[in-house]
Image 1: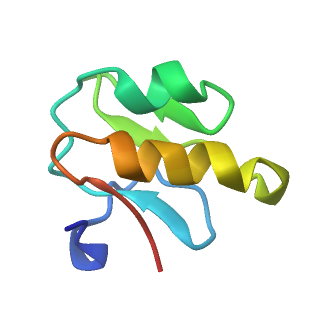
Image 2: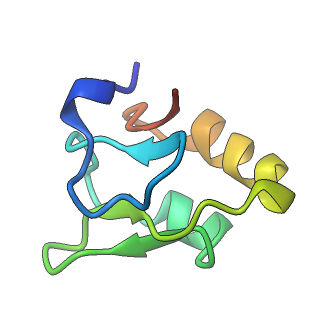
Length: 72
């Protein structure tokens, strides 16, 4: 389960986030490179909160192998 207390510091403001348990697997960034970005260590973070693409975000939540993608 994603931990809102351990959000990646680069997440954009908004209810969507990636926590620091990201394993850099590329799943979320492959699903939506517009929503998700990568830091220097290749860990994912939410680049932009895009409500019109909520279905892609939800797919990323369901697809993350370590459950690091979440919503408050």
